[in-house]
Every structure is written in C-alpha cells, then in structure tokens.
Image 1 (cartoon, helix red, strand yellow):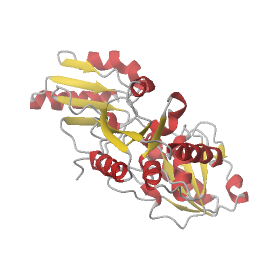
Image 2 (tube, one colour):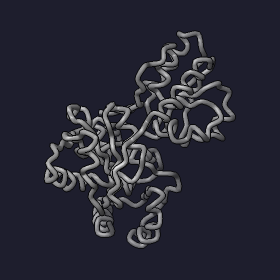
Image 3 (cartoon, rainbow, N blue to C red):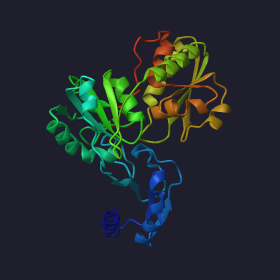
Length: 324
C-alpha cells in the first residue's frame, strides 16, 4: 500500500493537486501517521467519519482530490472530485471441508466475496473444482467492479448463475451472506477466510423480525423519508416516489436529508415511522438502536401498498442520483 501511495503522490505533484482528503475505514485508521509522512508538504485532511464503503466518500468536501483507502470504486457512482481508490486485499488462510457442502446436496456452487477477498475467488474456485464440484463466479451489474463481488446493497453477481445449488461467500462478516441468501432464495454458506469454517445461513429469525416491523408500520400515519447526502447512496428519485405513495394512500410523508443516520437524530423528528433510502444496512444493523421503526425501501413499498409479501426481499441499490 505504501508504494501505491507514493505513486499517487507523484501523480498529484505532476498535476498540481495540493489539498487532499484521506478516507479510511475504522480498521485502517492506524495508517494515518504513515500517510501523513508520505504526503508531507500537502494540505491534508483526514475523515473522522465511519467509512463503510466507497459510497461513503465525501465528494462535496472542499478539497482538490480524495484518497479513499480500503474499498474498490463503484463504477457507476458519479464523482465530483478526482478520487483515488486504493483497495486493501486480504488472503484466505484456510480452505474449508468440502464434505459439508456435499452432504447438503451442493454440487453446483456459486462463489462470492466481500471486496477484501475478491482476489482469492479464483483460488477458491480451483480448490472446489479439484474436489469435484462445478463452480461458477458471476458477473454483477454496473455498480460492481469485480466478478463475484458483493456489496451490502447489491447482490447482482448472482443474477447470471441462478442455476447453482448453493452459494458460498468468502467474508469475515455475516451481512453479505445473509443478504445473498434472501436475494437468491438458495442455501448460502459463509466461509471464514481465517478458520475455513463453513456456516449455513439461517435467515428465519431475521425475516420474522422484519415482518413484525412491517406489520407495526402499517399503523404509521406520517413517514419521514430519509435521503442520504452521500453521493454513493443518494436515491432522491426513489424517495420522491415513496412520498407520492404515502400521500396517495392518505398518509403524510416528508423527505429528510441526512449524512449519518442515528437514533438521536431520528428522536427529534416528528414522524411515526421512517423510510431509509440510503444504505440498507442502516435499517438492518441498527434497528435495535432506533426507538422508531426504520424501514428499507423494499419494506416501505409493501407497507405503503398495504400488502405484506409472502417472501421477504432485500433492498438493493442498482443506481443512485446521477448514475451513468
């Protein structure tokens, strides 16, 4: 990473960039001292905000350029600033016991990964093929940079390999495989890259909780519809449609602009329920911290139509405002 930063510095010097913003996720903020030494002489700012993905980039900040570390670019995300995306890849440490999949009837498997591990997917594919599995790595839409890549808001790498028996997601978290299990409707396993442990995702408890929220939200009369000011998550066009649906259904609806979405901010707003058009993970991961219901876009569309679906669908982001 240090060598890549030095190359970025050389390019910046050639084109006359002086003021820069550096964005790092929590796990990489310890690099700040090293980065500061490399870019000595530049007017530097460091983001103290949570940076969960490249969609969190502050494209409206008053700088000449941005260095975003830890995530890949979102190809169809509009950029207002010259932005250098410096990816941070990790290696798989231990391969799984393939018999676990075989006992579950998985012969044709789809392989996926969070961005930190996408470089390991071809090695994993070779491993499973040597174990006599038929293996597929899908190609996603214009929001995804790499084959097999998953975002917390986009699972389209599955779309052209729907014939698989099971999915395997290489990641050190649970949200990506949970999302894919719901998106695909197939058996989905989380593969821990360090221990090699394969865990089958059970989404029943999650789905029950989300259905309960939707049932409660049917009684809401006034909706605050949250739109992110972050350019990679901004879906004002969807928020406007949801507001129209609320009003047409005899309910109230206002669009609320926000950066970080937290319980404290929502407490002070006079709405029965909220609809989150920003990152879907906020509604999912933080719901226990919210005192009011915070629906995803997909959940809200069913609630406002007055009909809860038989199958639960995750909210996915394909395009944001200004996407090409």
